[in-house]
Image 1 (cartoon, rainbow, N blue to C red):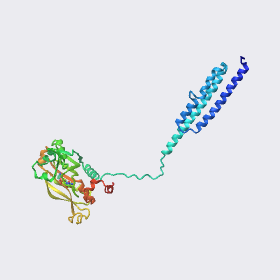
Image 2 (cartoon, protein in one colour):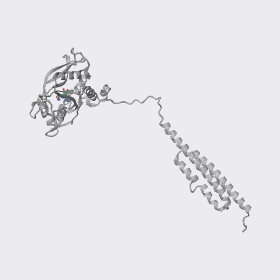
Image 3 (cartoon, rainbow, N blue to C red):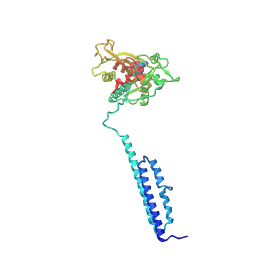
Image 4 (tube, rainbow, N blue to C red):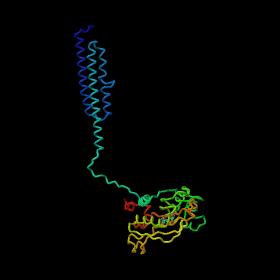
Length: 362
Ligand code: FA5
């Protein structure tokens, strides 16, 4: 067997070098072509595995190292490692290009053209009943009142008895009630919140509150009655409270709601919890008090019930009627809105017909 001469060996090595070099060049061209059509990171990963992974051709070249003399190995190793580095750089450059393309696409997709017309969003608005409640609350807050709320399930004692309506009192018929148990019912008015406040104040402090909220009665629903409706009641208790304080306050309410030129009048009425009691009318805003269809030719429309707090009620809630007097009033919010806006049926407030609701956008 003839041994290789030194020249032959270098010749052989040169061929290996040349072949590997050529192979690397071919691989590099293949890699560039593959990278040119790559579209996403997943495809790029596959290409990386193919060209730089353990089974990649370039990784196999290192196996030739052992066939080389020691002095050739560094040059060979350097050539292969430089190729690997170039491959890796090409792949990473492509990775960055894909990232940038993906980001550009996302930004293009999410671009907002500020010159376009805004979409026609339909904005909701506060329900007319809540608008009136807020309007009345604002007026009373301006006059130094506090807003008090209470539970809709109430005791018979607070809803009736402490308001001078004992169990057998015929005036209980004025407010047909929905009982839940023997002693609990859905409140028929927000007056029990007034009782709760007086009891909490312990007969000592002056009271100046309004109590908005839902109330319930066993009334048959029709154009002017609902089994559930909204009230705002008010109560003032202090040491020098007179009927003219009440009149001035209610005149302010009437003018706030129906216009600055309105006048009010009192008609005698009956409520067990007030004495004297009055029905309050306001001059008709439609005809200025001259008489029209809306006010049934009377020149006035009825807006609320009121009165001076009955001594018995003050006493039952801990206030000494010789020292304290008070006035109270109760407004039916739906009825008030019907008068103000000429709404002919109370049921419009609850059916949520948008054609109705939209008329009262603030
Ligand atoms: C009361 O509820 C008294 N607590 C009000 C009050 C307070 C008077 C303080 C004096 C002093 P009345 O039952 O009248 O009163 O109800 C008050 C208002 O609620 C009525 O004027 C009316 O506007 C409204 N209302 C009564 N029943 C209904 C109903 N079924 N549906 C819609 N509104 C009603």
